[in-house]
Length: 251
Image 1 (cartoon, rainbow, N blue to C red):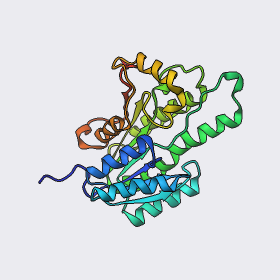
Image 2 (cartoon, rainbow, N blue to C red):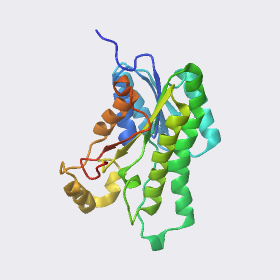
Image 3 (cartoon, rainbow, N blue to C red):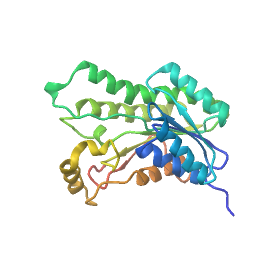
Image 4 (cartoon, rainbow, N blue to C red):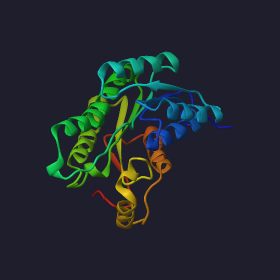
């Protein structure tokens, strides 16, 4: 029997209790990783993910933290390292999305979005990168969005935050190479709680825009993430991999 892809590796997934994060946690566990499932408010949901991983025969732990708070992130990483070992694989999946007309935008809502989506990417990456560099190995995938690649008139703040995530991952790939590979994934509309905010009509409109004429599933994005974490993408770093059914195509 061949060894699983991530056997012996420790993975930390922020926002791991639901949606894309949850699917990524389960996919990593199936490939042998020890998985730390991060949550900020719903410990019960995170616990269910851990229970599912243990049913698969995997090793996992729940770790609560506000990814926009430096001290909370530092404690989270220390807790994971104590419980599962040094972090080899990091997926930053925690995030929020809100739509609003520009006349309804406030600086408070701007700061909240940037704090969670941008600071919440920066802090976990910076908390694990030194250990990865010391060990000479690390794989990081930041969850962005196609909103960071195209104009979104009713999602100015969200679009800006995800463009920042893409630029951050790209710059980190140069700064941390060659030991650490850093990439981002830009999903389109995915069938998650966040995606459901678009409403049935909005979701159908976006499905119609896609070449594949449907919205995506969290498991499909998880497989994209696993590819970028794995040695199957050994010559890929600093890239943004779009997985959106064809709504946005890169040159």
